[in-house]
Image (cartoon, rainbow, N blue to C red):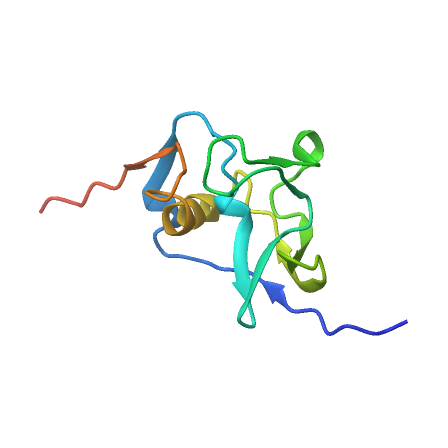
Length: 121
């Protein structure tokens, strides 16, 4: 059996708590896609039935049992080869950042609402 050197992919943003999401998810799948070492990746649990970015193009195989921060494998989008370990960002503050980066304006049906109000002096 071949040993793999797993890399845990975690992104943190100072803006994570500044925004919130509003609307109903159209299951475009863009929030579950990424790249690693120059290769296009997806969450191992993402079932792709259409073109990501289009409504209802994907589904999550573990949707009812997924947990915020659960460990997931990111696999090559074409071959399915495991490339890295990541954390599911579902319902975490970083989920908003991911959706802002990957989905808004590219097929995601959600709206990002700014909830930060600067202090007035």
